[in-house]
Length: 295
Length: 295
Image (cartoon, rainbow over all chains, first blue to last red; front, side, top):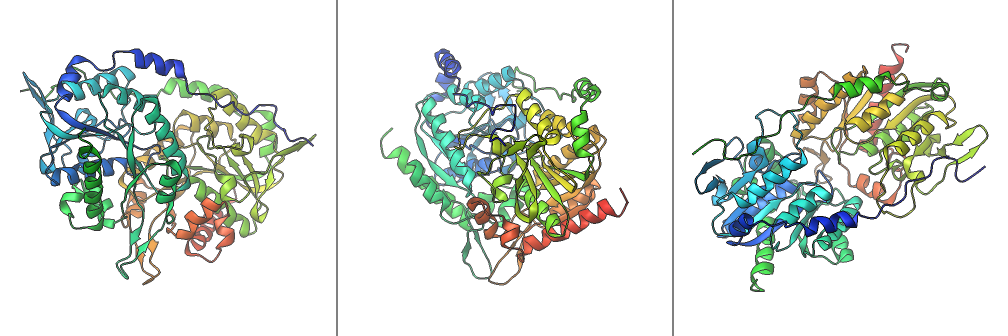
């Protein structure tokens, strides 16, 4: 009998490759064109999720609509290479980007949101495509530096999933990030994912505005009571443990899946729904965080 | 004005690297030791999901319990490197594998299920570990060839997430796969993920037993009616379109998240719950599919 029945050793924990990160940081990550376009954008907010399937793009798109409906000028960049779904969630899928001598014209979304997405560059069918690193890098640089963003109050950046090197290099291209918003769902693994996101933010010396818990509860039409179907109070507990703000809790509504599948903008169509009202609350918190400290 | 404002070209669709797959297939994928251990295992069923976050490990673990509660001898191998959670879902997390001269003793789970997991080899804390390809390959070979499985009716294999090369090489190590079970959730992307799984099965000439839709609906305690919170009828429609069987639809129950988080076996603890009853239905369908054709 032995407690180590395998000849193989379990893998060693590998520290993050700090050298690589430092090298990346030494690169002139922000070029002059990006600097020029971005200087008229007041607040730049990347939306992260440590884990797939939590509704990051849904939250990004609907937060953008909530900010725009509050009278702010808003842009959104979708650099989620694994499934760019912002255009669908804003109801502008199938539109194309145009350009003139001054640069690229973003697509005009609901509430006047300026939309640029990796999806606008893809072939129409659903065949998975493979992006090579250099192409991704060029695309993101152009999204930031060649698009005529004009004066914006908020630029929401729907980040690549995860918190690996890919998300890191996207984040490093954006000058003066205001802070990250992290999307999670009620589940034990989400705590680990949020930890990763906090480490990620530390890596590039950027603060975290807070966490949005998606799929928090379901309000049953029969009794109008909330049912915490994936667990109650997890988002709050996790935020307290991690020392980050819980910006809001988005309920599950059947109309959300329906809108997203149909390619209709949920917030615009169901502005009085509980989920939309929570997006308004979150937008107000974000505006207060950004605009009250005069930054 | 131009319709092609970017100097960069969208990436080209890349065909699956068939040469590599053929090379892998020419390898003597099944060694003699695996052959020997596996010849007393009647049915080998890998559980796949094209997409993360759909509850693959929950379904694998509870299907295993449903089969075992029906009087079958069952084993389960957990080779989900990104988050091996079968031990937690079976309530045996923290146990260790032991060995003697004849081989490795699997951990004894609920209903006498024999459990082997990547998790039993990991350090106790939650630090993410990096598995190199060669170590993974060795671990899987030992799970199949060195473990004293004995006579089993069913061996459930909780596969790595996705349908990429990693899942492919695991599947190629298992001799005479009976058929895949695919786990999905009601959402539009799941259709694409199931398509990928079907292609995956074709690649290794293996049939698909069917699809299990997880998180299908929520039965509200107030009126006992099902609410299709992520969309109604999607699993059925998708299965029809794809020409695969829908083996069952698992409802959402708050006790599922609770059990999984606490590390308690859901099926064992709540055997009369609607979800557990559906697992029994699914187990009966699987047994009929496997045992009625005399294979």
